[in-house]
Amino acid sequence: MSMVWTAVASTVTAIAGTVATVIGQKNSAKAQEYANDFNADEKRKQARYNENLAEENMRRKRSDNKREIARRRASAARGGLQETGAVSASLLETEDRLQTEVDDIWNRAAAGASHLEGQANIDNWSGDQAKIAGDYGAWSSGLSGASNAAGQLKDVYDAKKAPKPKG
Image (tube, rainbow, N blue to C red):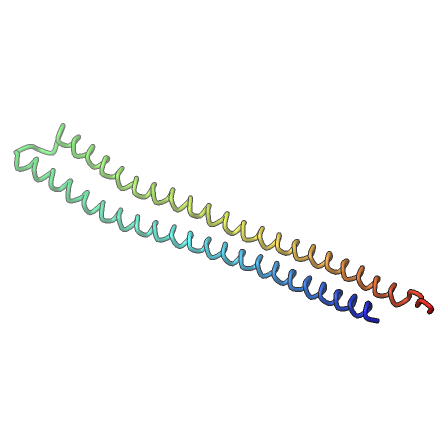
């Protein structure tokens, strides 16, 4: 009878271990998914912050640009130059260059935001894949544990069924 109880105890222990493994794998996968989702959200927040900061920097740059053009116009007027010909062309060229600097601020911010959004999408995908892998691992562990327990229960059954030695 001792052998039967040992086999039963071993089977119960194997089942408990399998359950613990399955729960651990599921929890680990869920934790990885949550961590990746959190990282994705943080990257999206950073992208929005960077875009908002770029918009503020563009507003400031446009204001600075207006002052610069006004300063150049005033300087030309003090020098007695009319806003025609070379003076006008110079002012237009300066305005174009200054506007390009404003556009560059946005282009850099947009490229950075796009990069962060791409990373966020990868984080979301990685989290989904971790959850799927955890689910497969849990199922695999569960099936393996069930198979192991069934084998041990068969051994118990065989041990109980075996003829007792006479003597």
